[in-house]
Length: 289
Ligand code: CO
Image (cartoon, rainbow, N blue to C red; front, side):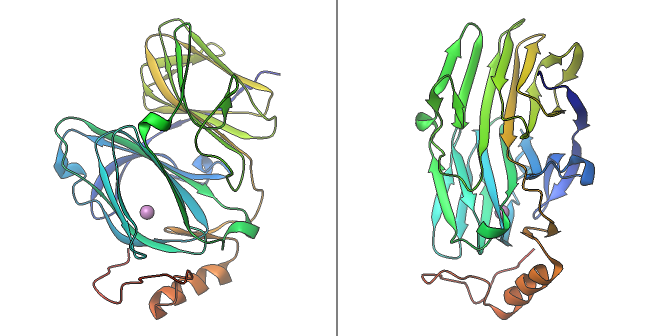
């Protein structure tokens, strides 16, 4: 059975971090939080003033962040001493697990800086796993190409081609799809999984309904999803296994109960938030948002 349109979401302009102007696609309200996906932010501007203040030191626990840059660079560093730069075309898949404190700072870029951050919830039994980073450079992301359809496979599988991000806490597919005019993307999905497509460029049609740049189509349950391109279009296509667990969420910390949330914030105050042994938890100079 083909997946029907469940709803179409419109992104909202949001100010986040130390003053970054971004477009929030998922996570604006309960209606735009799609278990297991909590939030999807699209940052992008040709004016560095819109993003240069970045996302200074803040914690995460109980969830994952997936940062995917189309153009531009984000410097990343955490309190355990890990450092890196996410460059154009690269992906950083971060499992916060029991807790990290990090900062994400977009660098001044000449031209349109554009990227995405998706937040994925972790199941109760994996919320307190050790933090983990997967850094993937653009050359590691395979592209499946056929008759006007180009699919960059970040996670999941297309026609036997598997993405480099594997062994995830829950099953997730993450594709970057480019369609030539009049072409169709069709993908088999696990019936009960949550599936959405965020249209970044151009416009598409799903079951005769037009979905334009900046809109996100959320699919109902079904065996496959189909998207037709009306002109040259590019979108993120994402699927994931719903957790069906209670969500206790405050800022960048996502747990199952209020008690667990309170505990996390108490630990932040007490300086006991980081659980990994080789932690270089900074004692001062860290402003937690
Ligand atoms: Co963060």
